[in-house]
Amino acid sequence: MQMNPLSSQYLGFSIASPIVVAACPLSTKLENLERMQDAGAGAVVLFSLFEEGRRNNGEPDSQYRVSSDDYLRLVDDASSKLNIPVIASLNGTNLDHLSQMTMLATNAGAHAVEYNPYHLPVDLTQSGRDIEEQLVELATEMRAICQKPMALKLMPTLSSPGNLALILDGIGVDGLVMFNRLYLPSVDTENMNIHQSVQLSRKEDSQWSIHWASLLYGKISSSIIGNSGIENAEQALQYLLSGASSVQVASCLIRNGIDYLKSLNQGLEDWMNHHECDDIQSLVGLLTEQRQADSHTLERLNYMKSLHNFQSPYFK
Ligand SMILES: Cc1cc2nc3c(=O)[nH]c(=O)nc-3n(C[C@H](O)[C@H](O)[C@H](O)COP(=O)(O)O)c2cc1C
Image (cartoon, rainbow, N blue to C red; front, side):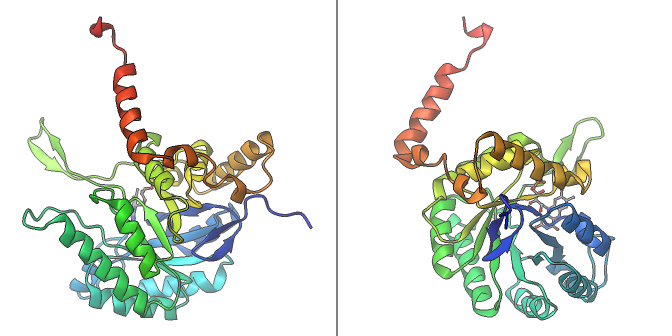
C-alpha cells in the first residue's frame, strides 16, 4: 500500500496533510467544513466562541458571534459528519466560562480544544510576569479539565515566548499555535478617526513565527503549529523546514477560496518530489540546526550582518 507523503501529526492525531484550517468565519457553515475536508485540510479549527457572547446572555450579536447552543450544535454536526479532527476554539480568559465551554464542547464531540486568550497588555500597571502567570494559570486549569488534546494560541507580544513555551510544555499543553495575529487600530488622518479592521496577512507576516518555530524545534514535546502569513506552499514549507509540524491557514483561504487547500497540498507534494523527499516528517526541522547552534551569538551576528549589508544609493 502506498503511503500518503503528506501524512502528519496534529495534537496526537494522524492527519492526511499538515495544512490545517485556522479559526475564521469560513467554518461557520457545515457545508464549508465538508468542502475543507474534500479539498484536503488535515484538520479544522472552528471559528471562536467568544466569552463576550455569554455576557450578552448568549445571544448572537453578529453573523460571526453565535450563541453557545448554536456553536455546540455545529461542533456536534461537524464532528459526527467529518473524518478529520474538528477542534473547538474558545476565545477569552474567563476561567469559569472556559471550563464550562470546554466540557460542553468536548461532550458535543470536539476532538480537541484550542484556547485563544487574545490578550493585549494595555493595562500599564500589569507586568510581563503577571501576563505570563495568567497564561500559565489558564493552561493549568484547562489541562485539568480538558479530557481531550488542547492547544494554546499565543500572542506574538510575549516578552519571552521560548521560556513560556517550556513551561506550557511542562504543563502538558499538546500544541502551541504561534502566533495570534494582532489587529491594531489605524489612524485615519483624512476623516480624523481611529478604526479597527481585519487585514488579511501577507507572507512578510510569517517571519516572527518561523523564527520561533526554529528556536523551539526539538526543545519541547508540544507540537509547534505555525500560524500567520502563509500565502502559498512556499511559506508552509518554510515553517515545516524550520520546525513546525503543521501549519494553520486563514487569510489565503479567505482570499482564494476553500479549494485553495488543494494547491497548497499540491505545492508541498511538488516540492517533495523535486527534492526526492518521501514523507513530510523527514523535512520537519531540517533547517533548524544551524540556527540553534548558538542562538544568541548567531542572532547578534545576523542582526549586524543584515544592517551592514543593507544598501541604498543615499548611503554613498
Ligand atoms: C476574518 C478573520 C477572522 C478570524 N477569526 C478568528 C477567531 O474567531 N478566532 C481565532 O482564534 N482566530 C481568528 N482569526 C485569526 C486566524 O485564525 C489566524 O490566526 C490568523 O488569521 C493568521 O493566519 P493567516 O495569516 O493564515 O490569516 C481570524 C482571522 C481572520 C482573517
